[in-house]
Length: 380
Ligand SMILES: *Cc1c(COP(=O)(O)O)cnc(C)c1O
Image 1 (tube, protein in one colour):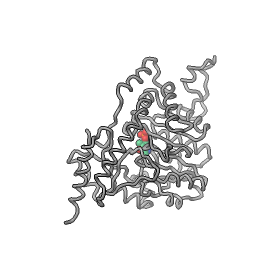
Image 2: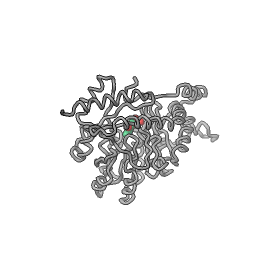
Image 3: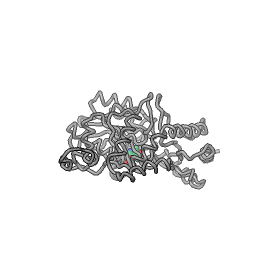
Image 4: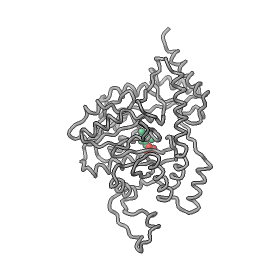
């Protein structure tokens, strides 16, 4: 178990206590704990508007949809994004009939600002920035570029729960920033996410859209003193994207531990880095200056990655690959060949086990297996 890629840790008694409150009062849905969790997340991050949803995928879709509506983008308009991500990121763009234009990645495995600038055309409307592995990458440069060219900025912060850049959450200046609280992310619930819009009207629209387009939610209605509180209007063909109180209850507990958990993740990564220091056969991914990463994953780059993973599996170590270059997939094949660095890195990178149950000796064991494998491949 220890040497699995990801193992979530839940504070079980506290979670059950928080969930119990929902069950006792008989409110498990939208409202109640979701309201509390949104408030707690605002305080923790400094975002003005936080809307709790049932996944980051739903949050990303809402971000793209709401901004498309706000700015009047048309079908076929372009959003610049990274090929090195989970497909949710790019699906969110396609859900809204926009085109994904891939730009290449930099040494942080995040979008490279120079390459992004080269991909801007008269139809470019937005940039989708992913904080890979919890890194802020060149977020500041990307933000400056978006401002210079009048583009919207969406941050896929699925890996970035707890990441800070110069002491602040990443994405505060973006049009929308989306976090994931899926089971293997840094703040695990089971499935949920948070979409944080810069503008109050966008948050308001997203809330309607995530509750079927209905203009009043059941929780506010049931707490209202209006005589006609059962009256509501349906203003949009919305979705069922909102989060529920059971997930929010778990989130409230897990949030109390997020900083301590991330500190231990950073410790694990430091142990790995110390073990690999000076070995040219193991490529490390640097962190930008000022970034206190959530360290969602720990990627390294090696030649002969696929056999390395098989060899590690023989030693009961189970790494993962984050990510295959999305242009490998049929749905995104049109971007094939446009991002050579992402392609090259995606063939060499893999993620070592990283979770709170790893001990120092687990990390040493894993690091030794990696080192002895790469060293054994050096021609004598
Ligand atoms: C996990 C992840 C998502 C999707 O999150 P869900 O909450 O599972 O929908 C999106 N983008 C990235 C980069 C992710 O790692």
